[in-house]
Image (cartoon, rainbow, N blue to C red):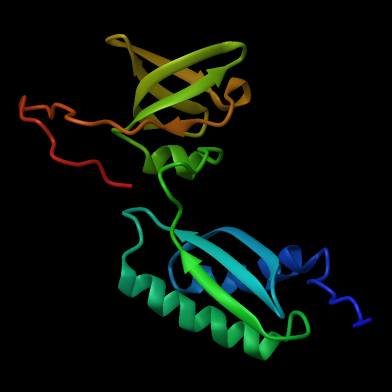
Length: 169
């Protein structure tokens, strides 16, 4: 009977987060998430990065090279790995103030206490987020706010009344 293959250590993602945060930040991006899972004989290292204004493919390639060098130099876990670097998708929960700031202008759904709210993000600050809900401005404090979700809109009208052809993801 072949020996059982060991997966990545349980604290591998936490270790990698500590190792990669300064690498990603020195490239001008935020490290949003690191996951490590077993993929056959290799470990799959998924790294999510973001920035104000988004992350384009050239940026992902640059950050990926920097992360790969850090992983090769840091030897975070034994064995071969596959690195996957991407930006967060539209389905990423809005948890941090920077997520809300980056969602300005977007339609979101969020629980404020026990009340589900759907509104457009107008602004965010140190105290919370301001949404337009049914034509009225509502400021919601961070302490009473759950994780928000961007709502995909089709045929959204722009301020000049024209129909937007697509929504960024």
